[in-house]
Image (cartoon, rainbow, N blue to C red; front, side, top):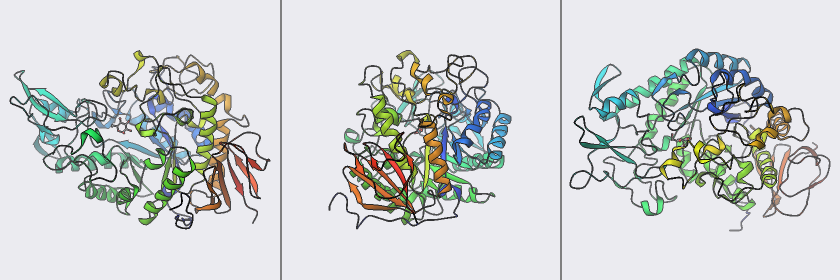
Length: 571
Ligand code: GLC
């Protein structure tokens, strides 16, 4: 089949007037790095509230907050010790309510992060499990160990882990505890850090407890959830060995049978119940799964009409930035998601991957397979990276469906690529002895006002849990606000046009004359979106250029390398 076979490629019909989550732009807030009101160096809910106006001005529809729950912060809050309270680092439940009210009054929806695969080892259930105690869940007293995966080890004295599973963060997925008498005891499962024990989702008590958690936050008025690692929740009965750790490591091989810890079918009834809970509330509540399930035809089962409203499109996030890959991946997305009536989502950044302004400035491979950039890694080319990143985002934001953007990308913020080892906090760094530098480089506090304190307006004290690199000053929001051609103005313009032209609800079809290695173009209603992947100028068709990813190209009628334009047809 030819690389760019437009005749067999899917088309997508417009879906005007549907629920917000089908077409909205959702902005990810990473609370510890967004804005810090109390000046302790870690962002907080009051800081978020004070800066929400700038997100409304940016033109996003919703925000998604990464975890702010009580947590020892071993994995930046993805290790939750109390799902129904705010960690004092971030404020109080009252601060949460005030933030939520402020967001709603600005017309912003609020999604929060639900972390169901694992708790923190400081969670009261796990603490009770360590001593072999009982816990009360939903009025019943239960053996706490049954809420997790505890097993005796293999080997003569149980000295070997119960199976061959590996942790995504490096090393084995099992840790051994000591019994009360100090003797080595059973092992517990953790697909992530040893401080993140996996819950046993086959246990109805775990299921019931999480339904209560959903109610707790929905009653407070949240508009929904981003669900962490839902594809890990159910494990095959008996926890058999991974059939091929040599090739798959902690993961899976696409196209082969799912290994016992990934996307087991028992999760689906759970998500159906969650969806029913969301729908029992007024308004349009939604849940988005961080489901790393591939190919997308399999992922489609997760977004059937009574399951997740949407899932992240990791296929798109992982696309190498070339025409043939994007052509195939966008086709696969529309085919899979349209088949079940779900919106496709589009995403280029989050708190787990190298920022695209740096990723596209070097050779760092697939986004989700990359492990950060350290001072000893090859350094990205900032100018190339930013030019490509702006082009990529403008190409993405013209697509119908829901789009996700990650805090700071609207500033063109690069990765912190020279962060010293002493600051590294991602457990991946320690678990691999520094071999994988980890994800801290994309999590550095945001610069708001250049030169305001040492942290450029992140707070008033200059404290920062990760230090900003010197270059962040130049990327500060106040340096870009109202400045023609800045990345911030480009994002604003794109988001406002997207809303006014209803592109999120729009249609999709490739432009046959613009589908080749050097250029890719599609049509959404009356708008043509075209990106130049080649090294030569590309002549544009007739029409009004309403958006350009490069400054000074608004009137020219050819497309420079790495440039994206939105061109409105005269109708
Ligand atoms: C998700 C989060 C990531 C976290 C992991 C374990 O992938 O995005 O930050 O480390 O789950 O909870």
